[in-house]
Image (cartoon, rainbow, N blue to C red; front, side):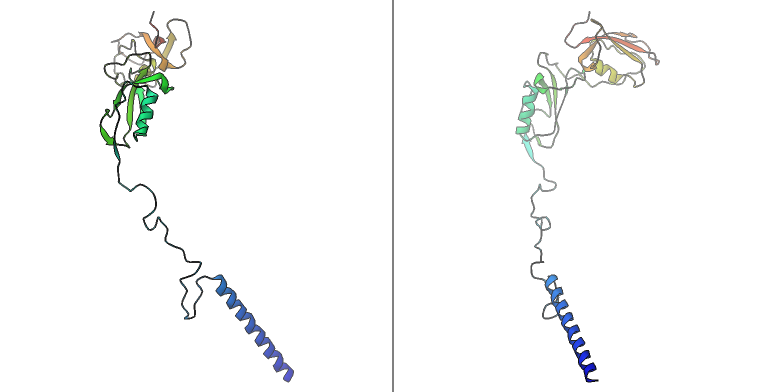
Length: 225
C-alpha cells in the first residue's frame, strides 16, 4: 500500500514538472505571452513600428499634383536633338509624324528634322503633355503646313498623284484589291512608306464600285517618268 502511494506521488510530481517546462517554452516563443498581470504583453522584439507608407511619409509623388515647365522652341532642329532637349526640359511623352503626309516612319531620328511641334514652343504646359513633332527628312523642305492625315475615300476616286503610297492605302477600303508596281525599274515595292504615286487606275473622279485599283510608283526622292 505504501509503495503504491509513493508511486502515485512520483508520477504526479513528474507531470507537474513537464507542465511547468512546457509553459516556460511557450512563454519564450510567444512575444505576446501573458505578463505577470495576466494581460498580453505589447512590448518586445515582436512589436513592429508603423511603416512609412502607412504613416503617409513614404516617398512618391503627391496624388493630383502636376508639374509645369516651358516647352522649348524646337522647330528647325534635328529630330533627335529636339527629343533630347524636350526631355531635358522635363517632357518625356514624345511622338512624331511625317509632315508631308506620306505616313513614313521616323525609324532613324537623326535623319529627320522638325517642321512643327504641338504644343508650340515657349508655352508653359504640364510636363505630362504629349509633344508631337512634324518632321521631314534632312534633304527635304518643310511644307507651309503639315499635310492632313489620310481620309477614307468616298464614292469617287481621288487624285492620288504625288501622294505617299502608304497614305493612299490607308485611305482605301480594307477590302479593296490593290496592285502597286514600280514605274521605273520593275523593283519590288516592299515598304510603301518610301514610295509615291505616279499614275492611278481608275483616274481621279471615276466612280468607285469595288473594282480593282492599280498604281505605279517611284521612290519618294525620285521623279515620275
